Amino acid sequence: MKRRDEMKVTLILPAIGKKPGEKYLKSWLMEPLTIAVISSLIPKEVDREVFDDRIESIDYDTDTDAVLITVETYTAKRAYYISEQFRKRGKRVIMGGYHVTLCPEEALEHCDAIMVNNCGDNMKLLLKDLKNNDLKTCYEGKPCIDYKKADRSVYKRQQKKYLPVSLVETGRGCFHNCEFCSIAKYYNSGYIHRDVKDIVEEMKSCKHKLYFLVDDSIFSDKEFARELFKEIKKLHITWTTQITLDIARDDETLRLMKDSGCEMVLIGFESINSGNLKQMNKEWTARLGERDELIEKIHKAGISIYASFVFGFDEDTEESFIRTLEFSKKHQFFVIAYNHLLAFPGTPTYKAFQEEGRLICDKWWLQEGYTFGTISFVPKLVTAEELRALCRKYKTRFFKFGSIFERGITCFKRTKKLYINFAYWCINILFHFEVDQRIGIPVGENLEELIK
Ligand code: B12
Ligand code: SF4
Image (cartoon, rainbow, N blue to C red):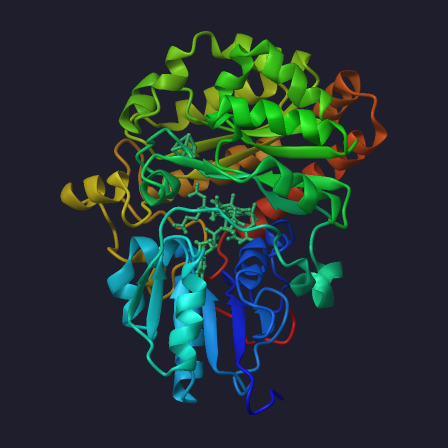
């Protein structure tokens, strides 16, 4: 219960959905960094509570002055439901995040106010208006990343339920402009990073010794990346991040990265078909030169690769899956993602599909009965159902035990570090079982159940 004179806010991370009677998908259970960063922007004198919808029930009757909900496209349906519950009880609801920035009008139909773009200094203004009962409908943030340290105290209650990885943000945005990517739209193809000192100080305060440096493309600012890697080296830790393939063209930075404890990088290859890369405006990766050679360089530097591919572009057929699986096996990737293309609102891909009349449902994220893995557009050379089945089929092949075993031997040859080999087996076995677990998860459903 809050004191009469103090202000209290309730921060909520909505979940995507879950199958009835089952727990939330394990690999989605990372520390809720967005909530920790928002909390760090709220002055100490304001009381706060957090509900992580993925793992706990939300108390809709909580005594609070305002409810702040972060919204991604996949969580929009659930966010709107949660908002409705609070508004029915007379509480004010404010929403922010990717989906709200990309679809502000839609979000405003479901809450009292929105924050567009990053929060930063605008949080103070929002809290002042809340206190004075003068809430505006829209707060326009700007791309920024100027906080000192995420407030990790918000994880404490539920720490054991999260994956044992510390998320620390280093940068936001990316200079590229891939047509399907929400980040390109949200950050207007720009990149911003935090101060190296702040990052390192925050890393020192983290619980786990394995770090995920949250960045859309850490090699966007080479000077910054080099300086950061030099400082991280002093911490003697192990880390991973998202990067573009062009890192392999810079031997010196690649070496610094490895020396500072980087053991794996996530690279979005998206497609090995040049026509598809052209369609998505990512043909620059093909222009980098021999893709195989660059991958080899990263592996030779002692860094594993989490390779991400997207299927459903205009030249994709089953042949693309066959070739991608061969490519993945040839390079013995640590782990892969074979996702289907998604038309995220606000992206050029969305606009193109809409203009071509290829969207099966305009607002698929709110569609009744929509499940994870459902294709929301009409692909060119296969049907939507075939595309969904092909993603499942080839993921299953990559993660079958024989393939895990074979790649496990390569992993051991590439690194003798026991914890990396241990991580390899844990992740691959988890993904083996999750291929079917994630397909068909009803978006926005079964989240009031007690099993979470
Ligand atoms: C870490 C991460 C994950 C993790 C954990 C996700 C989680 N929610 O816990 C994992 C690996 C599990 C994951 C999975 C997926 N992810 Co992800 N993920 C990220 C990543 C890299 C970082 C998220 C983060 O912590 N950011 C740091 C915080 C501080 O930034 P922020 O969220 O933008 O918050 C700031 C502002 O937006 C604003 N704000 C946000 N909310 C609110 C609320 C209020 C009230 C206010 C005032 C302000 C405000 O203020 C904050 C501070 O400035 C982002 C990309 C990115 N750079 O953010 C993608 C991203 C969020 N993921 C994305 C996607 C698509 C997915 C998947 C669907 C991929 C897939 N096909 O399976 C799944 C979905 C599962 C899920 N959501 O749990 C997309 C979402 C696009 C969209 N339109 O919604 C993003 C943007 C990546 C991209 N390239 O487009 N993801
Ligand atoms: S390189 Fe990655 S982060 Fe950058 S625009 Fe393309 S998909 Fe988005």
